[in-house]
Amino acid sequence: MAVVVTQISAQNDSMSRALKLMSETPLIDGHNDLPWQLRKLYDNQLSKVDLNTLNSTHTNIPKIKEGRLGAQFWSAYVPCETQYKDAVRQTLEQIDVVHRMCHKYPEIFQFATSSQDIRDAFGNNRMACLIGVEGGHSLDSSLGTLRTMYHLGVRYLTLTHSCNTPWADNWRVDTGSEPSEHNGLSTFGKQVIKEMNRLGMLIDLAHVTVEVMEQVLELSVAPVIFSHSSAYALCPHKRNVPDDILLKLRDKNGIIMINFYNDYVTCSHTANVSDVANHFDHIKKVAGPSVIGFGGDYDGLEDVSKMPVLVAELLSRGWTDVEVKAALGENLLRVLKSAEQVRDSQAAAQPDDLPIPQDKVQNNACRTGDGYPSNASHAPSSLSWLAVLVSLAACLTLREQ
Image 1: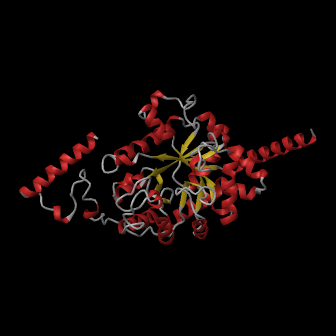
Image 2: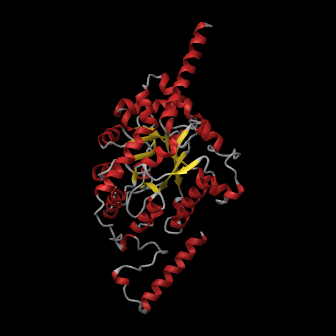
Image 3: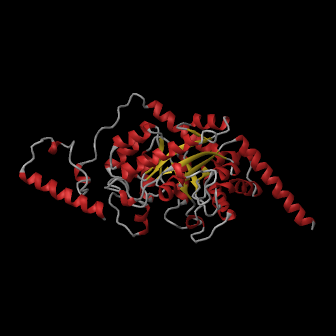
C-alpha cells in the first residue's frame, strides 16, 4: 500500500509541476488539422458549428482550456489532388476559415504573426492563433502566391505534402513508391527557400525527402522546423527524422515538433503517452533539449486536453523545469525570432520576381502561359489556338475527375 501511495504522490507532484510550468511558458503546438475538419464536416460554414460543444474532433475550446494550450499553428491544408487545379483557391479558403474562427471567439483566441504576438496573447490569457500552409502544391509554383500568403498571416510553409511539386520531392520518394523528380530541390525550389528567408517565413521540412532536408539545412540562413515529425530511430517511417539530420538541425538552431500520430510514434495503429515521451527522450539524448517542441497530430495523445499528461510524464522521467520550458515554447519562440531577425537583416533586398521556368509547369493543362516571353504576343497563330483548345479540354477533363 505504501508503494502505491508513493506512486500516486509522485504522479500528483509531476502534474502540479507540469501545470505550474505551463502557466509560466506558452505551450506552442506546431500542427493541428481542425481547419480541415471544419471543411470536411461543415464546408467551412462556421455558423453551423460551435467550438464550445463540438465533440467529433480532437480539438474544441474546452479541450484547449484543459490542455493549457498557449499557441497553435493551425494547418491550412488541402489535398494533393488539388495540385494543378484549385489548390490556391482552396488554401486561401482555409486561411480564411482560420481568421474567421479566431475572430468568432475573441475571448479565447488572439491572432498572431510574430514571436512577440505569441507572448502578448499569452499575457492576455488568450491562445495565439498562427497559420502554417501544409504543402508546397498550395503555391502553384508562384513566389507571388507565397508572398501573398505571408501577408495574410502564414508563418510557415511545409515544402511538400505527400506529392512532389514542380520544385521539390516529397517523403514518398524515399520509400521507393514515387520517383525523384528533382534530386531534392530544383533551382526554383532553392529560390523558394531564399524568398522564405527574406520574408521571415519558417521553412517546414515535415513531409520532404532526406535529400531535401540536407539541402535546405545547408541553404537556409534562418533556422528551420519540422512542424510534426518524430524520431526515425524509434519508428522507421520515412515521415520521421534520422539521427544525423537531428544533429544538423541542432547545429542550425532549428526545432523538431514531435508528432503524436500513431503511425509515426510506434509504426502501428496504437500509441500512448509513454510511447510519445520515448521520442522526446530519444531526441533529447541525440541532439539536446534545444531542438524539441510539440507537434500534435494526436492519436498517441488522444486529444489536446492531454497535453499536461505528457508534460507530467516528461517530468517524471527526470526532465528539468528548464528543459520542459524549452520544449513547451521557448525553443519555437527562439526559432521564430531568429527568422524575424534574418528577415530584418534583408530588409533592403528586393522580392524575387523570377518565375519558375515554363517548361517545368507546361504539363499543367490548367495553367496559361501568360507572363512568359514566348507568350508576349496577344495574336496567337492558328497552331497556338489549337494548343489553347487542347489545354482547355484537358483542364475541363481534370476538373470532371
